Length: 184
Ligand code: A4P
Ligand code: MG
Image (tube, rainbow, N blue to C red; front, side, top):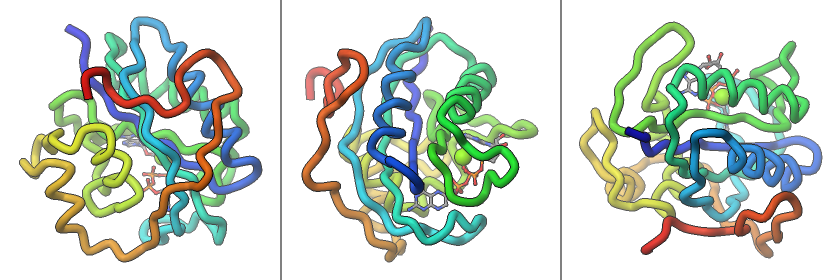
């Protein structure tokens, strides 16, 4: 059975729109997978809690996929995409051309070396909750048992998050620039 997966992406150095666009296009081409939705792009103030990603504001968004790829293989694939888009492996916590995180892998709770799902900090971050709420406000966090709309409403995160304006059109592939899941 395929799983519904949400992948967060963020870029805060170089041509951020281009890096996000390339990442989404590569994700849309994954085998055994189907792109269900892509959030709009959000311009977000850098949050410096665990890491120091530098001064540059991020572009953030979320991709929703249906996939048969296991969570572990998906992580490996995301790291390959990060590398192919020039992510600096020697300074992973610094400014990044692209960061790809598995936010949710269906309702699964995974705690393995190098892989924690749901992403352990997503519920504290407006830059994740805004695009998640856009794609699926009723999606429920499997351990916190709250929907994205509820988590967003109650978050104390004060860092700025705003929609990028104007939204760019996609340059790569044939995916729609800003689609939401079919039926919504
Ligand atoms: N890892 C464990 N679980 C996962 C998962 N679910 N998805 C491991 C992806 N990776 C996961 O990640 C570090 C390690 O996490 C990897 O080796 C992987 O095995 P990384 O991408 O090398 O480094 P990182 O991005 O600094 O770590 P992480 O955990 O993604 O950091 P955060 O907490 O996401 O912080 N501010 C704004 N406005 N926007 C941002 O996107 N991002 C960060 C990164 C900080 N501030 C930000 C943003
Ligand atoms: Mg990461």
